[in-house]
Length: 134
Image 1 (cartoon, rainbow, N blue to C red):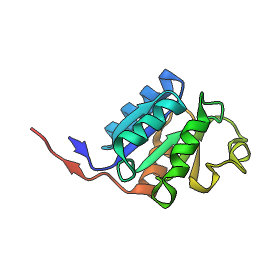
Image 2: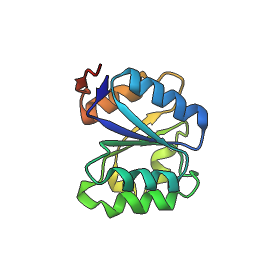
Image 3: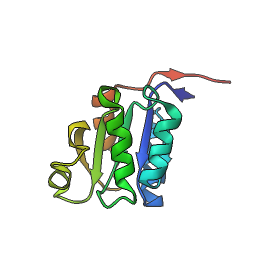
């Protein structure tokens, strides 16, 4: 099964990337992951402006975040929306006034329960359309 909806998950924490990848794929979405701003920028360039439907990312402490910010901003109005998943109660303040702020559409509290994040994803880009492959 593959989805037409592609989500880029960006986190320097292996466990968070793996958890989000598994849970989002189980919900029917296609997922690519990146561990740094540089690898996220590479994925954005590889898939093109229309390739990624949504970016889920965490902390502003991401390694090379400025490269990811530049990649998103360079897409302009074609940039995918961003969900910030953070355990920080100040995440919204951390992104205030940054180049990413205009692209952030939602904030989610990072936890082992991914259901609230998946609901935000569905609200933002819709339910995945399944394509059955043999």
